[in-house]
Length: 251
Image (cartoon, rainbow, N blue to C red):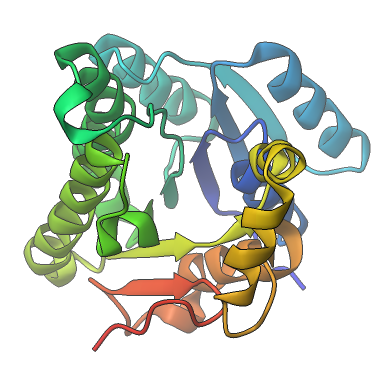
């Protein structure tokens, strides 16, 4: 299928984990994909692999904490593809600490890489998305919705992202822009390392998921990102999609 044929997409944090799964899914659905990440080795390798399969991708090394780098990233995509149809704000860096131990530096890392990067990329991309009646997909977290321990800086950024998603939905729906949030539980490289160190706690977490497993990044998470970038979701905006095996039910 080519549900995203001829669309130009930007995926931040696209070199690994959920981001790389979205990049692969978008490319195979016909999109031209800009892989935005700080990890040049992994990003270029992913791009080359997909291009060797006959898809169209390219890598942009970007420090998402710098607004000038975000501006340059958007301009590079526009210069190459002359359009932006899909923006996926997936990247986020954060440190786990108790609330009283969180420093300005900890908060800045989470807000700059997560909230501010999402905020400014949305601002920069919306003029182009108006022209294509495009889609924005932001990433939230069940940890933020629940307010998990040791996650204060992460929670602050993730819930701020959900807040601006609703604002963008209200302000730019009239322009044909759809914007939604994916809140996933997924088995990534980071989870694999955490499982090796905490096998008993990992099993406890799995037992707390109604579907009794972590989501697969390619089979469970990326298809939702494809749906939200396609015409099939054209009457959905401002929503949070809990792609978490039933762990959290929003009402």
